[in-house]
Length: 406
Image (tube, rainbow, N blue to C red):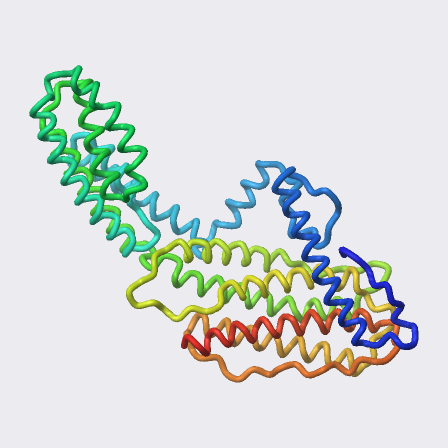
């Protein structure tokens, strides 16, 4: 924990309102401390001081080999966008190699290079890149063919033109777009090959054929393998993330209520963190993809990630640092369990909407807890209330985004 309370909850005059304010301040302090630790990890590569929850920084002290092993194992699922992209590109390169070898295409490696450079995460984006690439290569092939006819036999002239052509192609091509990059690269390749072996305008023709072949293969792979990119996957991964958070809430409540003061034990959050990494990757890819003509209904995906982090932080902090110092009264214990179950139900409803696009039903909002006055366990109960209430408020924002955009 980043700090501690300055008021004794057993003192008379210290009520739940003061403790709620302190709980809010401590939550902000912990968030700031985690941000400081994260910056320290990014800058120095190690954690400056012990910090809970430790599982947020599980990667700090692990060797590189174990980090790679965990990354590979964590993404070895068809729900991972990294896995989907790897499969799509691998299949495209395999088919490109087979086609280039079977048809005995001249300079067949250009087919593989085309698949590798033009493949996108959605079939629509791939089609746009292919159209621009074919148009650029067509213009570049005509220009390169005319240039080879004019100066193809003069190696000195080709050598002089190669240097400025490379500078223009590699400096301006990526900035101007796929069409310019492909067209200029065709010109550079023609000038380079002219110095290696006697070359005619047929080299431009061969490159154009290879690019078109690779473009067709890339389009087919994009059409057959996850053509929508992350637009559907982000819904599935966010729904799975919310369900794992919903299962973690009652476990955290039980761990807090039944935690022994001498040996506190937080529920495991590895399952939730696994879903969180998959959801973050899907969300990052989704943000990088261009919008479709018919934009789908979008939820507050960032709010879902906030709920996940909030749940993980509470699950790690509350049972370990906010253990009740006395038996929790039965009515407060019943409220905590009922509220946790209601939040789990709300989470499941929202997750169901993500996967089925059905409008979520009315939510049951948690009521105010029956907190005792001047009870030794009051700080833990207040912290639990603040944690559950903050999660409920974030779920309301997510539901509001569904209501407005549905």
